[in-house]
Length: 157
Image 1 (spheres, rainbow, N blue to C red):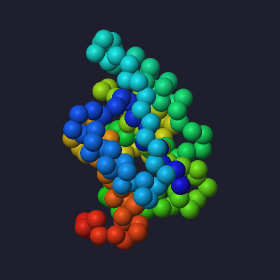
Image 2: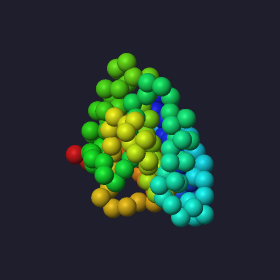
Image 3: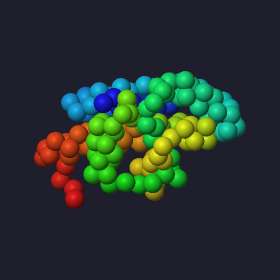
Image 4: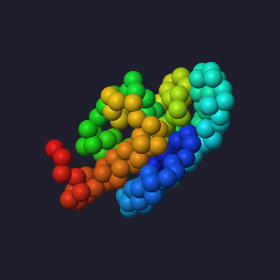
């Protein structure tokens, strides 16, 4: 099954190499593709709604038809690692061509993107920078693969 991590903006600096490592690890279990769309210029446009809507156009243009979409939002539902593993396992044996996880930019996701999602997911009750959120998500995708193969990486309940 294909997994798509569709994110606004890139990850640079020390987190970039850590993210690349977890993407490579996750590819042992999934056909993982990470796609970055331009963040535009959130610092130049003081209107968050306009920034989110512009990003939404770029996000929606990159979402493949038929994919099960999960929007990462602070209003989303938190889940355990094993729950994510079960969701991915069900999708892999179903008629879904793939699963897409969508991460917004500095101002979050536009409603048009959230409305397209089957599930709204929150990684934490705390606000995370989108670069950190992408790293946490990718690590959890890797962890889901280890859980499903009963490998020793996951030591949680």
